[in-house]
Length: 107
Length: 120
Image (tube, rainbow over all chains, first blue to last red; front, side, top):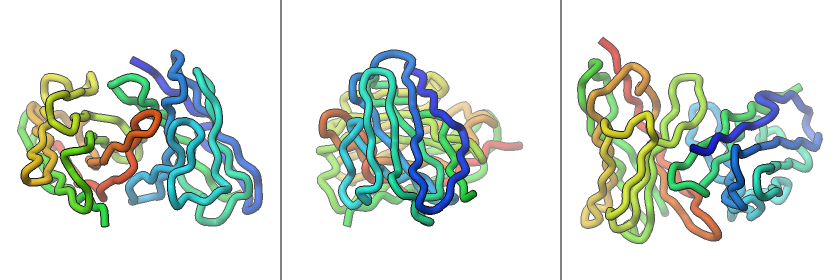
């Protein structure tokens, strides 16, 4: 099975900050990597698919990069509505797996 | 509007069974693979199972293999998850998700979830 590890597990930042979240796969997954945002009590929302493609309707301040085993999600200028938990997910294997999540909190 | 609505959650005793349903609307259901994802209280997301658009291929996480069965009825635009031999650790919110495909699969539409509690 492919293990996904995110870092950091939590992060405090201020409105306007640039933030980067990292996701590492236990083996190469090419670009089969997706990013989701989840707010408390809500379903996850797709942000980025195929490592770097922005889902329709998602603000351009979100971007993704990487391939192989190392990936990043960057928020260029944090907005109040961005404080949430972020998950990466691999679809290289038919047995999908998620990272443990990164909770982004207001400093 | 593309929409997924889960139902069938509830309180069940350990060892019991439950069947979850996910009613889909607003898209050609049979053309898309579907997944179930769960989230235990205070924990992260865990992929549970997936099924191809035709229903001919199914996939399961090791944690549920042999106990859970995913299926779909394309004539009713409905996805199912039959859960048997339930354990306390199966307690979670269960989400169904539609899978899109561009250069890889991703879950682009999610339901609001249904809560399953396994307890005596």
